[in-house]
Length: 345
Image 1 (tube, helix red, strand yellow):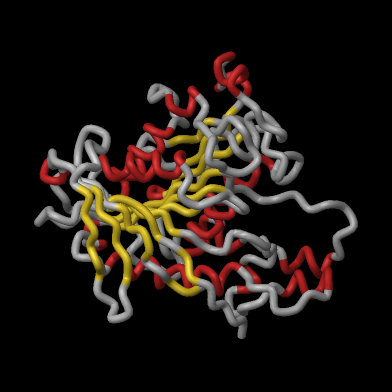
Image 2: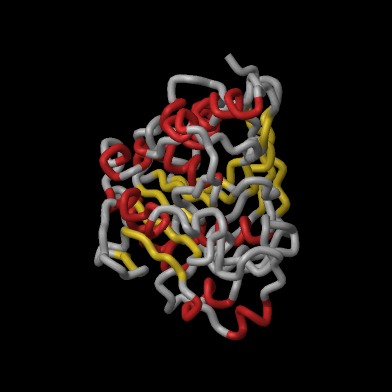
């Protein structure tokens, strides 16, 4: 067994004074990304304004293990052991099983009712966590995956290793046992260096269960499906703003200074243009609507704000420190920071 003992933060927004419980939205960062960065807060704030308690769950986002579907019953990364003779490296499944404890912790908050909906989104490594978590968390009602596809493997990889690098459990026949394709949406940059020259359409036809022939826009009438951005999806304003060191319109299809999300990272203007099918608004509006269960949306909005810091004390009860000078949070809702809900991974 792999011994994983660090603790990680959960941060987000809730309404501690409302007598109306909300569904839950969770988001997972990409590999090596910092946690509670401004763009992450922007997504959390957006989902809060859509009527959700919104949580960004920190996790150990290092050491990507490619024996994804072949390693579900193990805790360690067998490919790492074969290729580098490195033993004891945690695989994704042991992390996902532990992350579920964080989801449980937020679902158990007095402000949350996960039977009203539990939506999950993630970028890159976080998208893999999102798709794998579906197989352990039956309350999940919709997912959004960014920067997600089948990676290309360099020449010379031994066949035995390639056989272990299976993604079948994340393809439609496998994942649909837990969540139907009508509740899954995928966004990828067409110049993604991790997936380019790999499987056609980055494997999104197999993942999504939809085949739109040669079209990169495979968003269905119900909003599920996939979208692969192309050069024409970006404007000169995007290009002028871009300051990255990897492919423009690639793995970080939506931010201005990749790789990784940093404190000064901003979203590209086209990602914030609600008329674009791959925009933040279109994508997260779909996620909010697709994942909501039996809730009157009009009942979810209130007007006053307060900022709340929450910590777990030794006895397990929350300590609330309220700053009523926090000011308005966007247009709607009362906001709270879930600042130190620790869980072990």
